[in-house]
Image 1 (tube, helix red, strand yellow):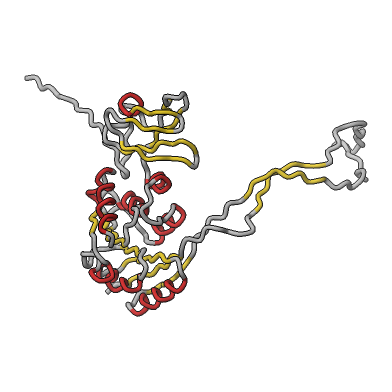
Image 2 (tube, helix red, strand yellow; image 1 turned 135 degrees about the vertical axis):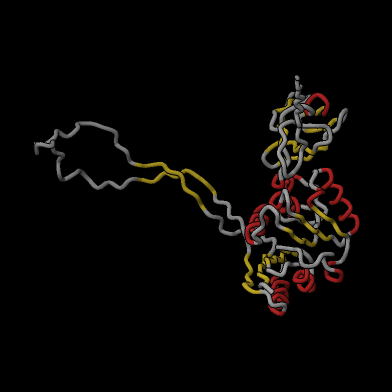
Amino acid sequence: MYTSTILEVLVLAMSFVEYSDCIQDGDVAIIYLSHDSMMPVKVQQGAQTQTRYGVIRHSSDLIGQRYGSKVTCSKGGWVHVLHPTPELWTVSLPHRTQILYTTDIATITMMLELKPGSVVCESGTGSGSLSHAILRTIAPTGHLHTVEFHQQRAEKVAEEFKEHRVDHLVTVRNQDVCKEGFGVTGVADAVFLDIPSPWEAVGHAKAAMKRHGGRVCSFSPCIEQVQRTCEALADQGFEEISTLEVLLRVHDVRTVSLSLPDFGPDPSPPTHPDGSEKSAPTSGPNQTAVSLKTTTPPREIPGHTGYLTFATKPRT
């Protein structure tokens, strides 16, 4: 008796939470033009994308190529085509609102103690910058419940989640979190608030969290908002309330030349192991300065975006 086995090759589709090797029709790819210039592209059979280096033809230049490939454009210039990640999406996404950037996002992810399997509530969704980072962190078994007050923004971000193949990990609700809450009760390990009046949503955040407690974070640009939020958190029984501000300090790296002091001739002549004196060299290089790299911190630190307030819900 003979048994035949058919081997099927599974080609993984692009996803913001799973890496795939090759570019496929329907993927969202990141076109890397330079360190400060990137653009997301929806890959489609027969489509073209215009760049300053010329045209990229999706059928011949993208589909079937490996992510990370160097692609030559019609004018002879070239670009790299990168697999999308939350970090790349943050610096290339279409802005519908002000967004959080990687410095704050990394702090939020760590301080909320997110991990695979975590259930998170978020408001407001905005352009989805933080949402994508949360989804990658809680995949493959976690879930994000995100609330957006603006209907068109809610619809657009839900469409992007589907295009990025992470819609199975997220539920988008179009409602006012301050009046209607998150739409869930007793399920969240963590809650994030990025709304004008976060103190009005603290009670809903507490109701959405699990009985064994969890972490909450509120992002606010003004210290007056922080004060009112801290008062509301304390009134609702939250503990370990703390506020911090994350600023990126970029140092200027430069090469400096330092003069070496002249201490005069060595008073003690060199000796051999047997104690006899060595003859001093009659000539040699006369080094008067040394070059080294150093950094200079900025006099001012621009880039204030907001304050992050964290708190812990105790077990009940």
